[in-house]
Image 1 (cartoon, one colour):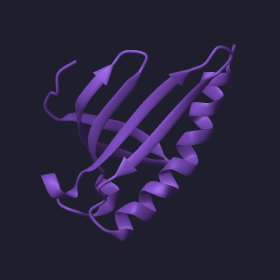
Image 2 (cartoon, rainbow, N blue to C red):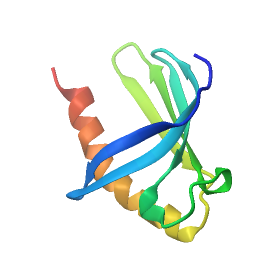
Image 3 (cartoon, rainbow, N blue to C red):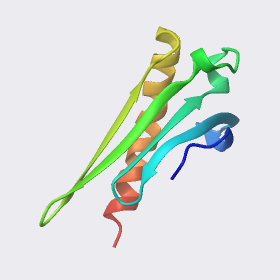
Image 4 (cartoon, rainbow, N blue to C red):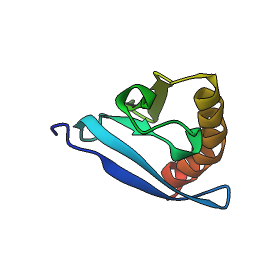
Length: 101
């Protein structure tokens, strides 16, 4: 899949509505997904150097699969701290989804 323009991310996190921005960098179905991401919660202006990069990589074994998630290129320490809080809410949801029958 080719990279494309900004797409909105919207929903609720911690009971607060949000609308953030991001764009897909690349995707290989059933293998990997990588995108750039800006969060309005950061308090930073929506511009290229305030985006971070998030990647997901799936490795399948004979009896299990491994999902690696990596986020990098934070604009500052506050953005990194905010992101860590967000992952604390998101990771249990991902775990529940992938372990459901």
